[in-house]
Length: 364
Image 1 (cartoon, rainbow, N blue to C red):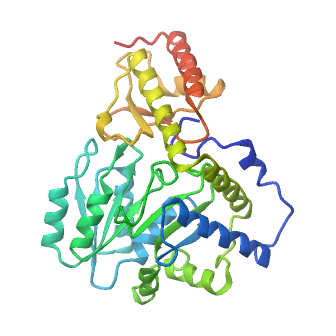
Image 2 (image 1 turned 30 degrees about the vertical axis):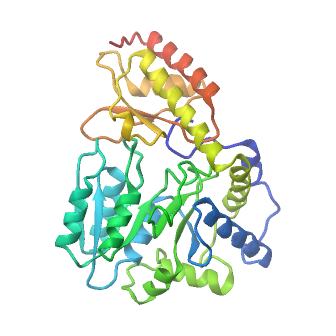
Image 3 (image 1 turned 90 degrees about the vertical axis):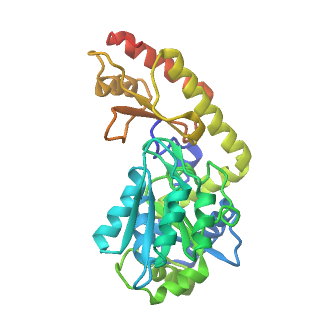
């Protein structure tokens, strides 16, 4: 699977879901979730006396909803540093909840301008939250969250970063990187299954948010946190099998090691870059600002090109490619997430080349 998640999983993660039926209100299962919450802190080097993790049932977008609706105090604003589709999603959440916000838009092909971020903070002293996606998965651009977080703290705001497609792949230290809240879902960097998402954040801010406007029932950070602290359980029914898979995935994450895992993703990315160039495709983003996880590839200028036909050809032979998310440019994406390595990429490009020949698609 060369899509940006759900990612390819190991057989051991798949089989971890095959367990005896258990009621998720049993103490045994609560103990499993407690261990999982503690292990998630270790992935981002979060000190356990300052940070906690809170689990939710849903896709990664539920985290965006929760952080945006739960962490903005009465009479305050959120500044969204927006250079792509996933930052735009945070803006849409603000609009749905009628939360005062600033949509600081910039080019989707570039990193945000830090001077513009600081200027917005200077001009708006009522900004309480700064929000920015770490990695815009729609393009492959990685954003300078450490610098953005430092600016947020300088001007008295907290910093929330959507790390859905980087957590567990690009090393993250929440303290050094000035991140007060980060988030992900199990099927991305941890290479587990869909259905479990989690937010890692400062416990003092979560407790303070008890007194903020309540904008959602199911998607309220403090409510879920409080229930975990009182009972050890999710407030509502958890995704039981996905939690077992995630526990196994974390064991495999720690066994592989942070440095080795990122190195593997990086060499897969480099193999993708090499294969794309050798076939003659053009890419969209400057490699200097790419995350090393996603390559956005332009559609070739050939009348025989059809993404759907090429996708289906590859899919029938065991490889999934993914459409792009850039409204102004026709692209598809090749991603280095999941339990794959360079040999898988080499095999993929054999198939992709065959697809081009089969459909008589010529590249410059």
